[in-house]
Image (tube, rainbow, N blue to C red):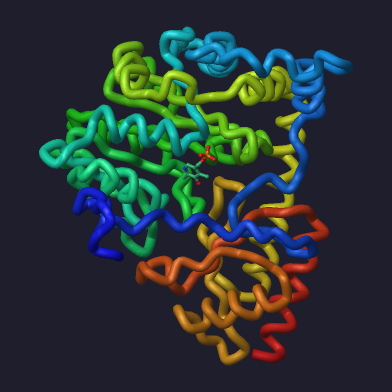
Length: 375
Ligand SMILES: *Cc1c(COP(=O)(O)O)cnc(C)c1O
């Protein structure tokens, strides 16, 4: 860094930014590294965007105007959607905050609830963005470690003194889902705010929304990126007590979601039949992939998400970080992109593989087969 340049704050100069999964610009990749949907969103999404844009000399005229600052219609639609699913939680628009993806929402929680003297705790290994968001605000951070079994550390959460905890359920990168009853056991003694990142809940056997009816210290984070095939649209949201939503709104950018994003999200939420079908297809492919790993004698955690966390075993029967790296490199050289997390001992022997189409899973299988023969 050149010393005559104005310097950022010391904690920003020290910061290691989040590393997103690769987004290759050339075609021909089997892309299984960022848990995007292999299927397109509901056709109603493109229809609604085109309708909003209009046509002719006036096309795009509405883009002159700022979007609704709170995403009011979208908040109401999200509340209605989950109220149908879980009447006990009695959700209204006052229980919803929308953001520029779940990442934006998570950042709002950090801004509003975390500081140097109010540390945020998060389970580990989990989504590696959490400590980065905390570091940006120069906040305190505590890891709540998983063991190799990846079971929910109920007692550690229950005993935590951190004013806010981020819990990923189902977890990433393992795909392991946690029973709502287990989470509720931790809530019997934990006194802070438990933020449950339910990015992958649509692929799970249950979700924690019923807890909102019984615990004011719970917030749920969702996104349309994965289960609604809209990663490019950037809509995520929080469900929580209205006072918690009020805190998020105080620290939010005034126009944190765009006009077209709000419209796209409304159209997607309206097409539950389409998404029920898409999620069922992904779960069926996931079951076949899990069976294929088992048939090969490879361990993979039981997944309640749209990806598998699998431990490759080479032709000599070995597993470990070097074996996973070898499989990753081989896949990459053959234009199959997955994710390897070498920096944590519990993740280094594994690869995280998004569930793709059946055709993509066949390419993956053939490429692993070739690795076994050649590596
Ligand atoms: C993908 C992901 C997110 C981010 O979702 P966006 O809505 O695209 O920002 C958040 N949490 C977890 C655990 C994720 O895997």
